[in-house]
Amino acid sequence: MPSYVVTGTSRGLGLHEFIAGHTHKNVHVIEADSKDARALRVNLKNAADTVSKITGGTLDVLINNAALMDYERVDLTLDAFPDAETLEADLMLFFQTNTIGPIHTINAFLPLLLAGTTKKCLTISTTAGSPKVANATNFTTYGGYGISKAALNLAIAKYASRFRDDGVVFLAVTPGMVKTMPGTEEEVNKALEPLVEKFRKRYPHFEGPITVERSVRDILVLLDRAGIADSGKFTHRDGRDGDSI
Ligand SMILES: NC(=O)c1ccc[n+]([C@@H]2O[C@H](COP(=O)([O-])OP(=O)(O)OC[C@H]3O[C@@H](n4cnc5c(N)ncnc54)[C@H](OP(=O)(O)O)[C@@H]3O)[C@@H](O)[C@H]2O)c1
Image 1: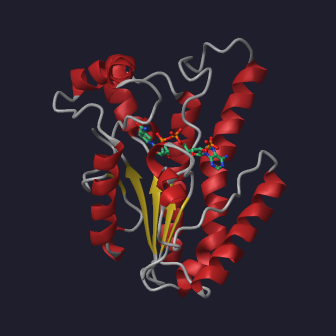
Image 2: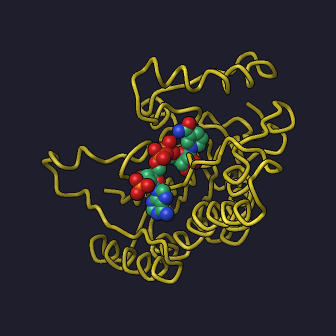
Image 3: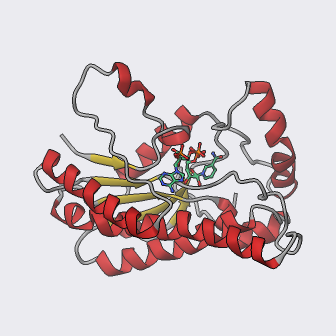
């Protein structure tokens, strides 16, 4: 049976709360988060060691899902912060969490992936990290978030180039606009409406908000069919270029 590691499983797309009532014993929850950079690296190494003990030294698929997305000042444009220090602190927090975090995660699990059979690493990205989409839609907010994910897309291309000859497939995949925020269906749709309108002005076919189930199902189909020729790509969950909507 193939083994998977998924980060960011406390809520949203990676949620594994079903584990509580799960009859099978093949799902394990391992904590690795830390605000302290050094402790995070140690925790990730320990997490990889724990996985290694469970799987016998291998890992088939790593899914980098954890990220900081909603934060108190995400609606401010980069020029509108109260002061330079606050802007810098926010940018650093997003970079630390969404770019450096996944890089440390990949490095911690790489030896296991290389020893695995499937050799796939899927990183959840976002069109908010696409300069082309930002330009086309006048998407001025979510600056720190978008910048951190754009950097992550490049990191994934770097890993793809580095490990192509070893047969490891690295993908950066945008999951769609997924209804993971708390609230009723009506409240969530209302909160997302301005962004949907913005996107539809430029991309009239934009699908709008989708359920977690639909997003995850499509991502797993993509993961299954992706091969080494796809490695390093930034795409939508149906395989289309991620630099558009
Ligand atoms: N939802 C969307 O519309 C959408 C669109 C495009 C891309 N994405 C991407 O899809 C992925 C999942 O998004 P989501 O909507 O499910 O987000 P979410 O509901 O905010 O969940 C994020 C998950 O990441 C974890 N996390 C955050 N910071 C962490 C850290 N430093 N260390 C470990 N775990 C951390 C959170 O854990 P805690 O509970 O401990 O904070 C949580 O489990 C993210 O990569 C996001 O950028 C989402």
